[in-house]
Length: 226
Image (cartoon, rainbow, N blue to C red; front, side):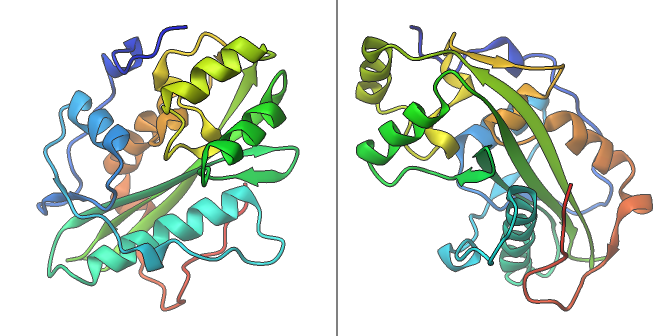
């Protein structure tokens, strides 16, 4: 197996002009999202949202609803700290037969997730929020990508767990790690699996004036299902 961040998906990424004159602020400490934005040619600063913005799961909340809510809350958290700025926040989870798989707590948790996903199709959902502080408007979107994971042999599983590359990654895997046992199905977005659907983000930037709505006063943001 080969573990690397230097994948073809980092080349030729779509890019669009920002919809406002505000500076772009990434409300995430994820190095993978920063890498994607940088590879696409965006200039931005990083202001991670507070931990409190990403907590709790509502009863019967689906994976799309969860990532949409978290993305909105992260954007709101950072927007409250800035007088202006175009805030970009995101959240990503894996989902297997309706069970939401977030970031593993430890190596045992990572192993359990990978064994659950081994040999199965599953989904990755990324929600993102683009929030204009000056306009008091935002767009919340969710993108789904279907994946097929090949059956993992015991040596494959042990090698990946020993690499520690599973840390901080939804579902305990990273598509950007160069794993040849992961396949994106039906023309799905590879960057979505990494944590930020660059194709849809460029479309939202281009169509922001048409898509954006006034900021809701609801604490957790809009309801969302897809």
